[in-house]
Length: 198
Length: 251
Image (cartoon, rainbow over all chains, first blue to last red; front, side, top):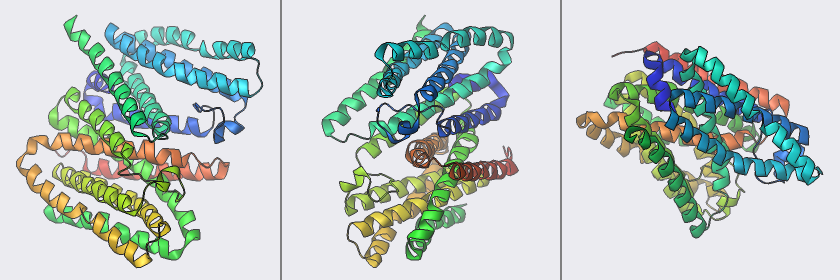
């Protein structure tokens, strides 16, 4: 996303980087406000305070951002859109499992938890459609939206997921983890390369 | 230029340790007040220097973002693996899970490797411009102060005397100085690889700020604390953005 944002922004690279930094701080503050915390354990310290509604609102907001990211990526080109969407899907699966676990832990019934989670998760769809029409109209904004999207990916990967990856220490576990990380990297690189083949 | 590099290397290693030693000497109360502020400040400046300083500079020097980004990605992975091997773990709690395994020698070895990287970063940044060098150097000093204070805590905790902890820490972190001098000469000759070193430097700054320091910053949730933390982060960002903009584009 970052190279595309920079190429599209052209001379305004510094501005795109500014948006990127701003995006990181924005997500930091969001997480700070406990609006949105992806704890994959149901019993971590922060979610101990986070009530069901906060999880649901946070999830809706997060998925709204996902929708805009998907729209911006597809407006760049088709393969780019596919790659970005796959990243969104791959991240949403563990995240929603975590959310479901928290809701069930908060005494929601399984059915209710599923229903509420589906409702909050569906924010992606209107966001993607609205994002498509707005960004199609003001295409100048696309590089900056991409910069903010990249910031959200980086923030999630590094400050949310990485500390979790460092919790288990065994050699076998570490090796498996590294192999999976490399598989993720190679998958995405392959998809990006398809663009030049097709 | 070499003089600047040596000055900042000394400040970033021996200087940071002396300040850290003063913190240890002043006791727990001062540490509890100062270290969180320092970590917040370091987070702000690390990210700013990476995104508004190192990355734009490296892309401008190469002229093609697609060549630079793989090095940032690779750098982040490299630092992930380094942390994984528990060679190097900047934990600010003396009691965190990893440290029960990490003994003194591992901390010291990790520290010298980390400071070796610092030296390379300082040299690469100064070779790309005085301004970039100064901001990168300042960032390393600030980060090292909080990092070395933590290392001290761990060494004392694992039974080292204060004097021994100080000397060992001094020796292990002095790697910054030969690393920066050596990198200066190598990078001065092989000028074309400087942008890639800047990219890897940016990766180390981003990795430290986001996956090492940010989880720390999220540990306290009371409102006053959060506001103060955010204010310090913003001061860091503005300060570095200001220094970077003074230099402007000197190409």
